[in-house]
Image (cartoon, rainbow, N blue to C red):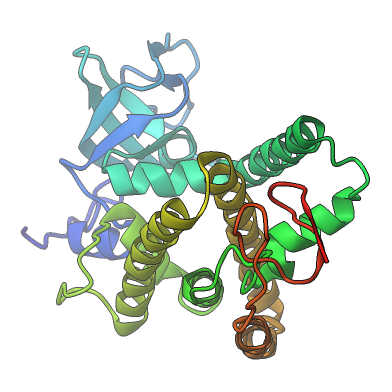
Amino acid sequence: MDHWVSTDDQYVDSVNFIIAHHYWEGYNFETTDSLQLAPTLPGADGEKGISHLIVKAKEHLVVADIQYVPTDTIDSVWVKVASEQFTQGWVHEKTLLSKATPSDPISKFINNFSNSRTLIFMSLLGLFILLFVLQMIWKNKSQQSFSRLFYHSTGLLAPGGWNGAFRSIYPTLLCITISGAATLYGSIQKFVPTTWVEFYFHPTINPFSLELPPILVLFIISVWFIFIIWCTVVIDLWHHEPFQQVVIHSIGLACICVILYLIFTITVQIYVGFPLLLTYWIYAILRYRNQHYITLHCGNCGAEIPQLGICPYCGAINK
């Protein structure tokens, strides 16, 4: 790509623009909302008298041209885009970026997750509570308080011994990895935000890419570990638990992962996240070690139980 500069303020230095804005002509976007395009580049009088073209959501756009309009007090950067419906027009860069996302699947996932993470957590939590209520009804175990069930199922954010369901270290290792990845993500957002923006516009899941800075390499490796460990946890559950318990424990573990993500991405912004991460890792490891050696088994269903009394799986009383 040539590095060119014109004496006219309307033109754009391509290299400097790429460094500052992370995209250039030929870059592909996908709209997330309807978008209005001006058919011509506005002059000093703005957009008066210009009828706009409408681009619907979920349409692919390609950047055709970029120009500066120094007299525009709203946004001096105007981007000409062309849609797959052969519609072309100009739009403010701020408007484009607020209503479109890079067309790469990873970029779209990042955008969707960032915009709906609270909804995802509330949905998982609601489903988790619903399944437990149904389980209590089915097994007629209303004498067990929900707080006790929630404690046993979430393991207080370190599921080392969920009623003996997890003898393996994988759930605890998953929580440790999630908290570390969230801290890395928060650190990137806090200290090198342009690095994350560049990754958002040009993502990759290859941790061995030579173009990635070390902190992004660590983050991508941690994401791969999360995926691998999560699959291992589900497989381990599948071999030791009935389907109903696999679903409940998986949803509970997903709730924990989202909680940890929210806690550490927020707290690292005020520097509390770093000592909190160390404290949590120590707590998770100690909790797993203390509950790892559970040897009690239900005399009825054979499941591991943390103490004598009512089996949390079949309801039988163990003395």
